[in-house]
Amino acid sequence: MVTFKDKAQEFLAQERIAVAGVSRQGQETANLIYRKLRETGRQVFPVNPSANIIEGEMCYPNMQSIPGGVDGVIIVTRPEVTEEIVRDCVEAGVPRVWMHNNTFMPSSVSDTAVQTCRDHNITVIDGGCPMMFLDLGHKCMRWMLGVMGRLPK
Image (cartoon, rainbow, N blue to C red; front, top):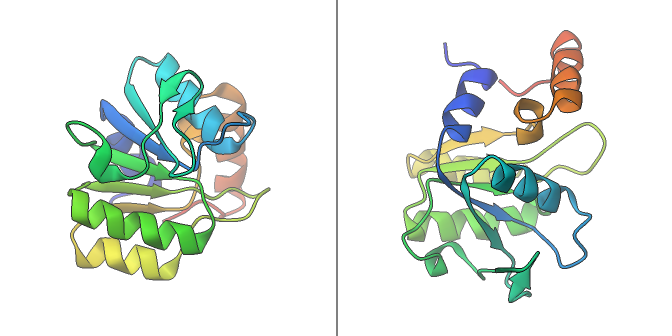
């Protein structure tokens, strides 16, 4: 059986990752994930249709506009926006999607978007946070959520 940890490690082994939901304010969860992935040497692409530049880098309005495509996208948005982004991922041929969710903020997960991923053979992680695998404090949170039975399947 493939576990959440297995799925997360496979996702995070990718080199070209988009992060949808980054903002110009820079304090959003998506921005923190974007920065951490960039620090690890990956090619990371900010996605926000309302911004041209995020954190000094070109920002893309959608998946199709990213030159060369991406190996996966982390979505940190409202569920109804997640559904739009997943439809965009289908059109762009994105093979992996991670819909962010943690205990302390609203979820990006949409049942409709999860089903769309499955219908189009997109590997989907429907919950959790990539930071649980990238940062010591968040790794501790992952352990605690695991004990509580609150990690994605």
